Image 1 (cartoon, rainbow, N blue to C red):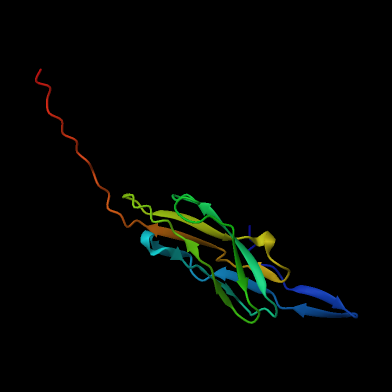
Image 2: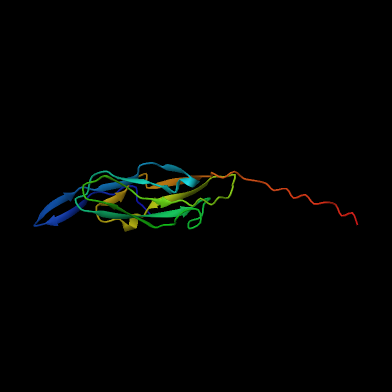
Amino acid sequence: YCMASKEGISVESNRAAVMVQTITVTFNQSLYSVNENNGTVQPVLIFSNPASTDITLQVKNNDLESRGGVDYASGPYNVTFPAGVTSASFGIAITDDDIGNFNNKSFQLVIVGDALPDGVVCGASHRSTVVILEDDIPTASVIVTAPNTQ
């Protein structure tokens, strides 16, 4: 997916080399947690420098203990940075399944490096994990049957 770093881009224009400032994109946190009944999680991406035009990035999901499309709305997710801003968030819907589990579930988010526009590179924090905190208490059922007396 992403490369950790890349040099600035050099552009030739009328025999003068112009150095374009590279923008590094990262997640603002390596771990997000959300209660299963909260509805959404809002990961945040950070630019090292503001861009002069709108830039749209793509983030993909990788299942860990959770399942995309079942426990949360599966990606890919498109995230747009309006010109001049250095942070953008996006929402991921979380499914409240009303099923008691003993364990939390998680999935990973990854910035898609090969889909980045020229001049934008992934930083060291190009991956983040989302933990869905279980909100339902597991229940046990006991079925008692009368002994057969015949």
